[in-house]
Length: 223
Image (cartoon, rainbow, N blue to C red; front, side):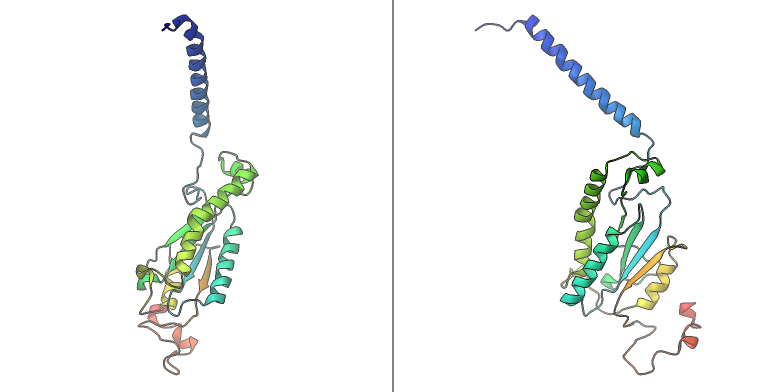
């Protein structure tokens, strides 16, 4: 068995080392170029960049949406996602699990992705092609948005997501309006049958149970 000539291997080793050096240098150059630039998180949000806020308040009370209602709401929410402005935050707040809080928290959120490289240039982020940005938006839809929306609208929700006892829509609307991110220019989208049912008021249970608005608006709980 012949021994390999080390001198013959030397050019190969040098060539391989050169390739590795070039690749390492390219990676270092790319990292240097993007250092300090804004980057989106896993939900597509540039947190340190000023953004518009849209809130969806979903009434998860029984009865759940029927087939036609489910189709219409799902289509609307898909259109809402498609029309988001760059970095506009879309937050979903629900009454799932009978959670009533004076400081509501979003169950999930996403942000509108950039449509063109100009959007990224304006905030000093790394540029990208239109094709890449479209794929990025689709990945965010498939991996984050669609699964969360499907779970929220499911005709048979998980036990932890069921709303059994109350439908406190008036209280929730008030509480959302007091959230720190609910600023001038924010939008609130309400998905509900508007059949209020809480300790404060129960619509459609007793005739004339709900007072006239001129009296209702003076109640302490809604000031």
